[in-house]
Amino acid sequence: MPNLADQTRWNKYGTTLLEDIAHNSEKYKFENSPISHWAFYDDLIKTFGRLDDKKILELGCGTGRFSIYLAQQGASISGVDIGKDLLLGAKALAKVNNVTCEFNQCTVINLPYPDNTFDIVFGLSILHHLSKTDVVLALWETSRVLKKEGVAVFAEPVENSWLFNFFQNLVPLGKPGMWGYRPSILQRKKWENYIASIDDRDMTTYELLTAATDVFSVRQVRSYGFLSRLQRLIGSKYRSRLVAIDKFLFRYFPPLRFYSQIALVTYKK
Image 1 (cartoon, rainbow, N blue to C red):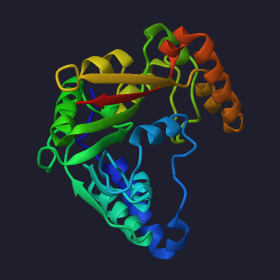
Image 2: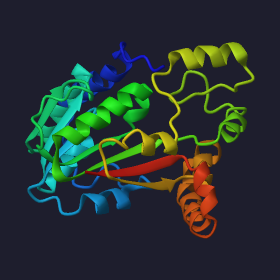
Image 3: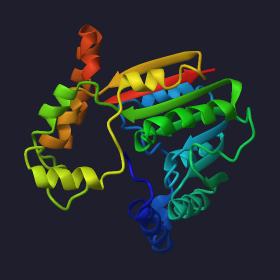
């Protein structure tokens, strides 16, 4: 079960951002989307549609980079997170970019907004930090604050095959002490320490679809990432090639979507 009680690691990102902005604010002014290189980005933006005058809520907004970009495109933006210092960083970043965003500290299962407030609610890699019970509660809250014709979109890492995941975990990822390091499952003590330290869990496409059956009438999942997950082993310079191969494989061999790395799920009331 993910442990969200200790926000030290996450808040450090906020304090580091605040310190850096104080010394060099110019480098934090941006015009392009900070996530445009992500495989699902084009489909995400297409799902949002026109941004002018839309009220949008980001769950787990962190330092707010993508929310701030959306505000630059004319959307009315609110963002929530449980990390106090992350939100301080988000507010400072919004000020540097001369946009108005509302950032609030709260949990995603108890949102401080009235019913039927937002046209869009979205989250990027947020649900897998929650227990299965809290995922359901978060989707109920999402539905509550969405307008009648509103849409909710979540991009989440998934592992649909325990066997595929087992073989993947046989190989260490990264180097000890570096961000994203994962030992081999064969290194039992290191693996136990690794599992105890993480604050997320594996989700499946099935969970994302079934967790919302009582609150959303339409549920659609698009899959991304099969061979592209190898980029952390062979180098990010091969990313575009791997993504292109994935698109080809998913188009002509649809069953391979089961082994995808990312699911983009859209919910409609």
